[in-house]
Length: 198
Image (tube, rainbow, N blue to C red):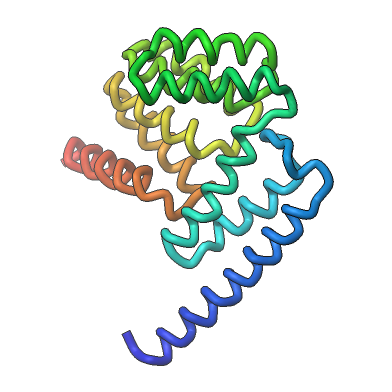
């Protein structure tokens, strides 16, 4: 790599970092900044930054902000259940996690992350049809949900639906081009399909 291309890359990264810094400042001062979900008005700008991120590290910073906004609700009961469900999932207490996330979807059926977390637990327990249904709910509410799209790919892999899995990972990459897991999975599936066609 030449010094000129390094200089251009650094300049691009610096402009991107400045834009992200400005976004942080505006987001933190915005009214209602403590509450969020998939309808948060700050998300379109974040998705734009996610597409323009110059490298995986920068993209992961934006990804973290998006997950933070997706996770939060202005309903304290929903937040409590979400935190309980995540703690249970981390401890591999999948029954408790399913109970918590199911309650979230009953209390707040328009809260996409409740459906996504429930889909994740059902994927982990091998309940793939339930997971597919819940991913469907998630994507109805938040079509840009790269986590749900990647999860859809993983479920389709388990069901040996190679073409559908590849499509799901490619949809995730349309939203989040530097999503490393989705990129690796898409490359692997593409190669499998090419090998089959030979």
